[in-house]
Image (cartoon, rainbow, N blue to C red; front, top):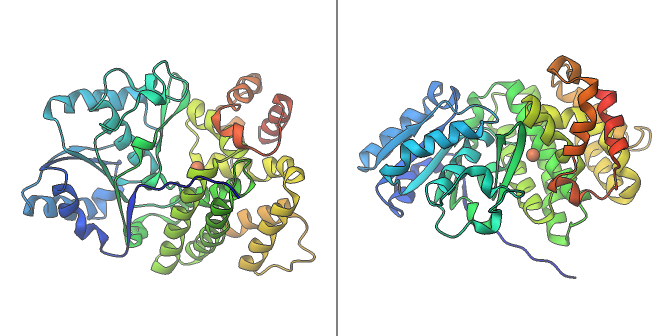
Length: 384
Ligand SMILES: [Fe+2]
């Protein structure tokens, strides 16, 4: 048996965990930048509570708010130039995946020279130019699914593509996870974001780089994220489902940080980067179609997943069909709403080969199935 395993983020998982924020900030300094999204943190009152706790501890702060989903690189760079002379000690992110990614990129730009995309995995400086001087990041997730609150990756939209920056130095130092903070998130948004945790668990379990330890996390991620999603789908105001999904989301990241993802994520990247399609929505569109291509390369593992899903969804193991049928059943049980056609999201037939070319990014390298460009075009055509 051989594997490497690393995990440097300190995670505190409990209702009320944000009480620790002032002490966590003070261990780094007295001036923080707080990155938040467009609405929810403010309307739910969480932001106000956090700001007042910082003020009580004499911590100064600047607010970087209104961060959109899939933020464009120019927006983050203009934030960084406004903050550069203020030399913050710590970056706090309060929100979902895009907010955490923005915080990580700010932490990079405030400690390194040059432009964001130079540090992308395919950038001219590359990820090896990222060093230990990255500003510390503290994440407070308010919605669960991406695992971005504990991931060493930041995704950003630049030059019409979703670009990945990935470095061990981008791991957040601390994640204060309070599942109750997600209770204010609408049901449909929670499910759309939350499906990512399941797909990450699934792709980690299928991945070429899967190890015994990543398998352990991946199987648990599948189980907990699907249980959480099903519970939120029927009772979005209950804390139990929210906690279960928050846990599943952390587990999915613990798995993929050590195994990588695969073809579903790989193809979703150009769809989100070029057409601003929500990450979870792109994953849900691709799930069954890509699964049909991957299953022949991972029969035993796909059967494991089928059994876990049948158990959670209370489906008869013997006459439910294969994993693709069970995955379709899962999507309809969750009632994610109508999954749109790519054509209704601005994608044209003439663009499919380019999307397929861009699907062969770093996420594709860990897919167990050797998909060809034609395979990807065929999948996209079915979604058009
Ligand atoms: Fe994801």
